[in-house]
Image 1 (tube, helix red, strand yellow):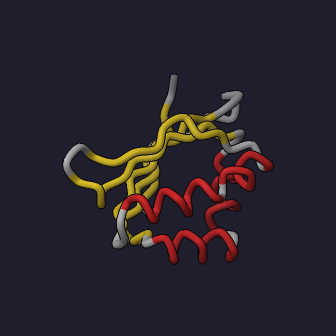
Image 2 (cartoon, one colour):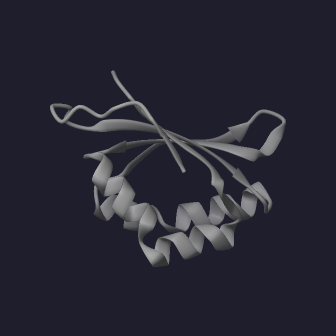
Amino acid sequence: MVLFGKWKKNNKMAKVLISIEISKPYAHWKNVFDSLESERAKVGIKNIYVGHEAGNEKKCYILFEVPNPEVLKKFMSDSKNAARMNEAGLIRESSKITFCSD
């Protein structure tokens, strides 16, 4: 996982752009991703956009709004969530996470 940008503590919510690659069909990955929606919402992670590169369903982009970077880090490193995304076909070493400013 590669992190870009810096989050400023005075931000109310951070926008986080994540790019990943997947090894399984997009529909399968998206179904697993969607099944974790309520778990993300419980910790304050809000989906803004989820999709794939035009013409390449193996390259996906996610835009989240998160209370702070630690919430996202904790969610992504949770063994249950990590196992579900691995099963969905996430290629972990392809993950790039960018914290964005308004």
